[in-house]
Amino acid sequence: MLRRAITDAFRKLDPRQMVRNPVMFVVEVGSVLATLLWVQAVLGQGEASATFIGMVAFWLWFTVLFANFAEALAEGRGKAQAEALRRTRQTTQAKRLREPRYGAAFELTPSTALRKGDAFLVEPGDVIAADGEVIEGIASVDESAVTGESALNILLAGFTIIILAVCATLLPYSLFSVQASGRGSPIALTVLIALLVCLLPTTIGGLLSAIGIAGMDRLIRRNVIALSGRTVEAAGDVDVLLLS
Image 1 (spheres, helix red, strand yellow):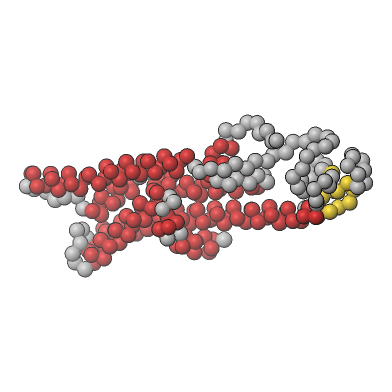
Image 2 (cartoon, helix red, strand yellow; image 1 turned 90 degrees about the horizontal axis):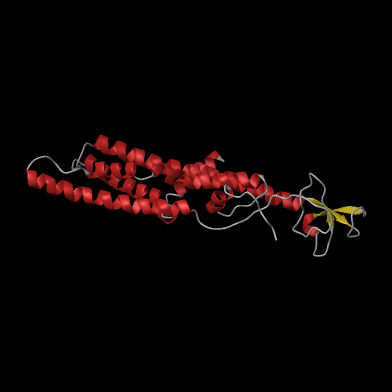
């Protein structure tokens, strides 16, 4: 799983995938720019020393790859749990009743062989083989599935736009200050990129997907299939679940 997660971490560098996470997409763009500035410095035309720019580029790429690795590792665990749940559904044996009443004789039948109208017995500790209607008895069942996108993603996207606007004004102000005072030097683009990454909620953006997928993984362990990160967010506020 670790080897696959490492491979997926590099494959997720595709901008078409990174753009779904605005914070990490901005960090990736900053990593590319820092790398180009490092190449320029190596050729002797850099705005700062090649060592400084190279270290900034290294840590930016490390941040992006670590976020992708965490997401890929969480996805791998989630997929493994989902596959185990699907296998359970295929191998679950239902106690199909010969007559639709409690106490009637039953025969073990694969859940995939159940048809509409069949009645089966569920006793404490049994895995429910299929969806159905309770016609006799009472039980408590933990089941939920809701959809949607994480509200935290929208908040992070808003913060990213604001911080981008703030950082974009720093270079013109720096150039104007140097020209007006006649001394000093404008802020280096490498420093500006590093400042942008520091101001962005990089940690939350980098681990947001992993946190959501890890939460979905925990729900799957309880045989509850969550289809998105918003499901996990909403599940924390659920006290009573009504099924109809």
